[in-house]
Length: 116
Length: 114
Image 1 (spheres, each protein chain N blue to C red):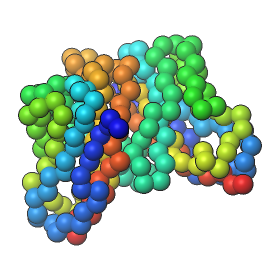
Image 2: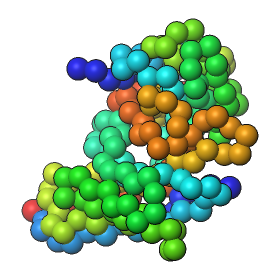
Image 3: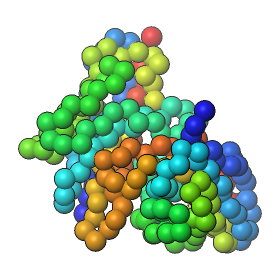
């Protein structure tokens, strides 16, 4: 079945450091891939997405490239800020055989803390 | 501001009681979802609805029921709460139930069952 495996945290970085959060997936079809971010006490917000192989999603300085050959969608940012401290979730959306719904499958989340 | 409204924000409930979590969206989205979020497990889908009048079971549906009488509302009911249902519950919606549509989330309901 479909699943997402992402790097376990917590990840602690100094401001302006480079960030990578690894995410790999298993899917039976051709999924869309997403990164969501959750700030304390809030719901999840879409950070970026990619809907086909080699697509690059980007937003707020974050980037991730849909790599079909390595089944990966790693999240990167060149210079993190204190305000980036949050939990990051990798997710894939696929339509299981016989279903009319595109389901989201989430990784377990990675807590990022950025120190000034 | 358009979005998803969940109520209550938090609740403490005695085991065995019935509880309904409310979810309303004003984006005219067709698809709606309920997830529970537990530490170390990420989010797991409880129930979903492709469109008004239809519902389906997700990954962890036991002990929960939903209804979708109209486009905007998607309440989640715990008929007889148990401590293992202590969790944070998120309602979400998407324009269509297609796999490339992002989902929009409410701020969650923190539920504690004693």
